[in-house]
Amino acid sequence: MTKYYTRACNFYYGINAKSLIKKKLALPLCGKRNIAFDKVEVITRKNKKISSNIININEIKYLNVPSKKKVREDLKKIILKRKNFLKNVNFLDPSIMGILNLTPDSFSDGGKFNKKKKAEKHILEMIKGGAKIIDVGGESTRPGSKTVPIKAEWKRVFHTIKNFKRRYKKVCLSIDTRKSELMIKAIKLKVDLINDVSGFSYENESLSKIKRYNIAKVLHHMQGTPNTMQRNPKYNDVLLDIYDFFENGIKKIKNKKIIVDPGIGFGKNLKHNLTLISKISLFHSLGFPILIGTSRKRFISQISGAHDSKSRAGGTIASVLFLLSQGVQIFRVHDVNEVKQGILVFEKILSKFEN
Image (spheres, rainbow, N blue to C red):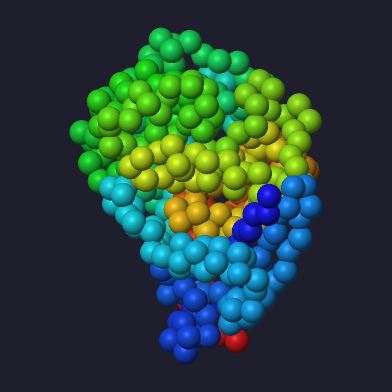
């Protein structure tokens, strides 16, 4: 079986992008007028053999019939403006998802915010810092972590979720859980987004159980479980395998309120993570917003030697700005204020950029 994939590449920004789009020499990325591209990488996968070729968009007409058809279908999704289905989140602009771990054992901030007043203070700090989404979790999914019982996990997050909408009506609330029972409880408390790191595979019936609720979902990739995922992860091709995972998962979600997240550090080694980050624009051809969480992750330590997770803000910001240049829409981070500042400065520079 032969399968084709399309990755937008060779990007232009700001004044250049707008000018090239107007002259029809480049195409807008995800409906954005400030990021454009004029080349695509056409990837061919036949069994285990993979080949690729980068061509100008005006050369697509010379491809063979099957690949030409697929590339044209993909292009429609790549240039399409994403539908805004989250409250006060515009997918034309970069959005920050602030992390609130109400756990005693998360890899970076375990135990720091699991007291009610500290959690409330941190939520307010993240919102003031620029977070459009707050992602609340009561179970650590760091490498090597074990499953938390449903009762204990719900007890950790209940008060925060219950009071959130009364206090922060304009902010999107996400729950980070793998358990359908908690998903339903959170939905009934007006949560806006379900973020399941297992990609709705931890429980076979998760999607069917929440099907009747018109809730947005993060389709997140993870190989294995948190307890096993970093034990020598392997792929035929990490980029294409995860693309196929998303493609299959999207078919199962009927309301199509989907955000895709390739799961940096969730069953990936350094090479896998860098491949996903550097080639992230492939996932635009799925037609949905992309969320990515590089914040304080181990790959930053492997590159820089920053072993203390709290000292990885520089690596986090560097990765976020590169991903922003590739059109990624949502960034899940701990250091909201610092990342927001980096985004504002970077975007201002790009808006004035001219060759």
